[in-house]
Length: 393
Image (cartoon, rainbow, N blue to C red; front, side):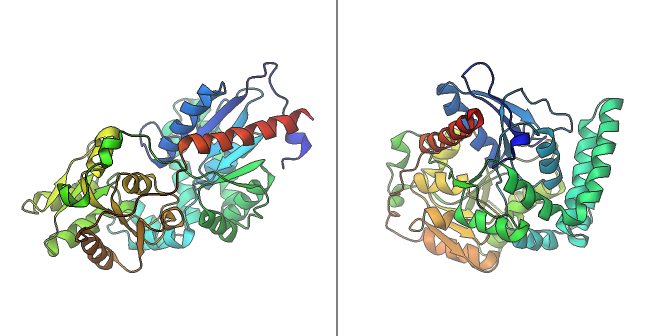
């Protein structure tokens, strides 16, 4: 638990305050962490808990008496700076931590001569994250005071760089609760940071709420075969999947947004789709409801992502009656062992296993795990209230 000199008192009102500290770019770049926080806040607000989303900045404003819920430790310099900002508050952390072994594989595999690709291949993850921390902070600072603050933060970060993951582990040991999405996530954090895991609570992501008619179709009547869902980016490996699909004459549908104006990666993906002679379809950005409906009309979801923690896409696709085939580097088989197949090897092996799954003529087994977002939030609220009670005693 947090030492007594870092414990704040509850606000005069009995209503709990929770400030979620999220990625600085979370409003521009949505992801699974954004969905997770939105699901939490929607349900916590109905339980009379006052929630606020605070994008990270070196001078982020945290409300007096609020429990601080930090989301994401994989921007480690942002995380440590937030820990310092939150001194005097009780802290909950949702790490959403990716296995650093697979992160290193991902960086080494990135192609091209862009600064991002070169830095990723040439330097350890700690140096890459230090440089990214500096660039993001300068981009976000729009005043002289802000830029001076960024310089001070970056100077401190350079001193922390050589032992950054050890410092992350130590910081996690000091907070009230570390809310894990998966058992293997906790094991990865222990190995990568030295965290002692004495303050862990398991709070997996919940299944989506949707119209039951979405899963009414059996596998034979679904009009789409293989589906890929996710933002078009190197981590998701859509370019590699698309190339392999074209080479083997495999028909696929992709759903996923690209950066405004495109990027080298998304532009390359678009070129492959355009030259696929109708094998590949790219539906770009869709509403969440439309994505779920598309999953309900597909037989198999392929997830080639280098790293995942507890993929919401995998959970949603399995809930919609898809077979799910994933690369190593995630934890979906922990929760959905009968619905998710994890494939060792490269993209060729992954696509081969996916096409075999597509040829299955029977529907996958129904999901027996009824864990929902309401269950997740009930456990999260209980953790908050335990912290608050301890705070008053």
